[in-house]
Image (cartoon, rainbow, N blue to C red):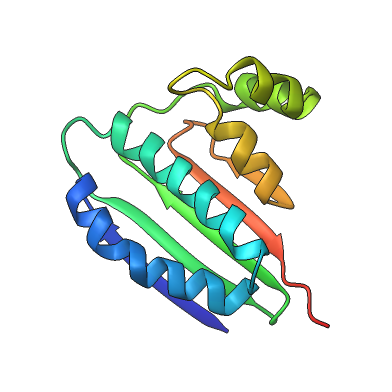
Length: 138
């Protein structure tokens, strides 16, 4: 089993971590799957940092279980959001939401996260996301 935990409070701290994160995800998933998962992780982390007004730590945990699943968990200390409502609109038609928000500055993150992951779960408060991706081997 593989597991790493990273904590950071600001965008600057996260930027310092990105090359390490890139290497970890690429090593686990390989190309081209790793690219979309990296984008999804960036979206989730940007959402966490936006809601983290007090600059409390954001936790990023990357884990591989039984060599067949990548699990990425991101938790912030913000007030959260109603994840069930947001996810139901995204999973109903992710393509339509993506096209609708194509030229807007934000609003596509949940669609990207849902597209990159095989499963997505939020805690009840809406301040923690778990993204799961099956690791495909040839």
